[in-house]
Amino acid sequence: MKIIHTADWHLGKLLAGIYLHEDQAFALRQFFLFVQREKPDLILLSGDIYDRSYPPVEAVRLLNECFEQILLELKIPMVVIAGNHDHPERLDFGSGLMEKSGLYLRAKLSREIEPLVFGDEFGRWEVYPVPYADPAAVRALYEDDGIRSAEEAMSRILSPIAQKIRADKEAARR
Image (tube, rainbow, N blue to C red; front, top):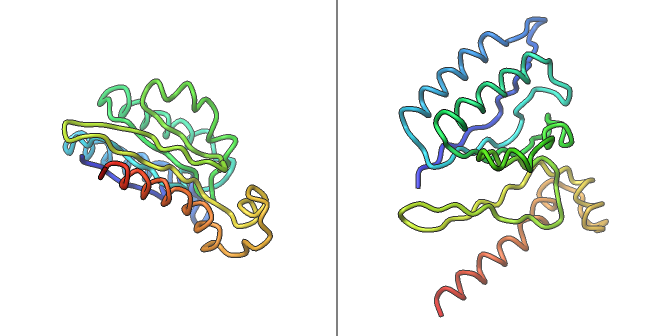
């Protein structure tokens, strides 16, 4: 299994009053060439796809073009999770439809994180897509006033996942 992991694209970034659109478009063209050359089984894009919750139209178009090239031309699946700069509701739009093209968007935090299952000639593998987890959101989701830090929030989310993985490993040994 070959995975390319990337994050923090911050599309739509404004730096010192200048949009970085052209630079970001160039970087994504280079990324596409890299992906084309490496031919991974999966791409993980882990958060902060956009620089802010309401990205400029050009940034949305740029992301769309990039996804179309990777998913439709190269036929490489992508798992994309939201970061703290991304708007979960906006990023999640059409996620069910997009899965048919190999784009697995996970923008909204849910109580149960279901694995995405992939396979290749070497076997089956799972990806647990956990989007950005603000401690206050995790506290409300799990109704647990004891969650105060990012570490506690992530521990609460990952604990049942780790338990499931251990149980699956134990069952496979039998």
